Length: 216
Image (cartoon, rainbow, N blue to C red; front, side, top):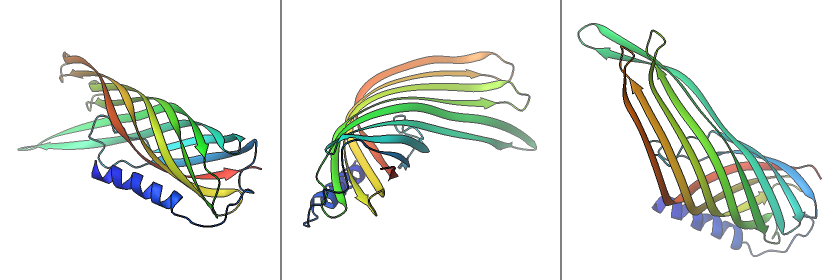
């Protein structure tokens, strides 16, 4: 938790600690751009910190101080694991992991000072993730399905290298609705685990780091 608080403190200091002239040429009504980046994951074994490799979205300023950011989030990974069981038996297992979701943020932007600006606002996100493991004969060994609905208040900073290109970073605090369905089968094809978990909790939304490119 201390690491997340440090990230939030750094964002605040970075955005508000710039004592310089205001630049009103960086933002204007109906300025639109694309954003892309990745989420920081300190430990993905924690159920609420699902792997999210890439997010891609649009940033639309209705007015200079207010913008919408709809985005698509996805993750894909396939692999193979070999378990060595003494004395001479090996157990290969293949896996197919993936996730897909969408988010919508609505942010208030401060007036840019030099090339820095703060933004603050709510974000709602739905994310679906699955992990499927297979035996070497192609039968399923396990199937884990996760659904996550979050609503968080984010605080971030945006630094523009030019009028059209810059970087973003944000983190936040919110509420999470978490659902997980676990199923497992033995090597004979008999299901020996079938459980469901539902939980609602407060959580710290990890930092997202990305870039933005404005078209106008």
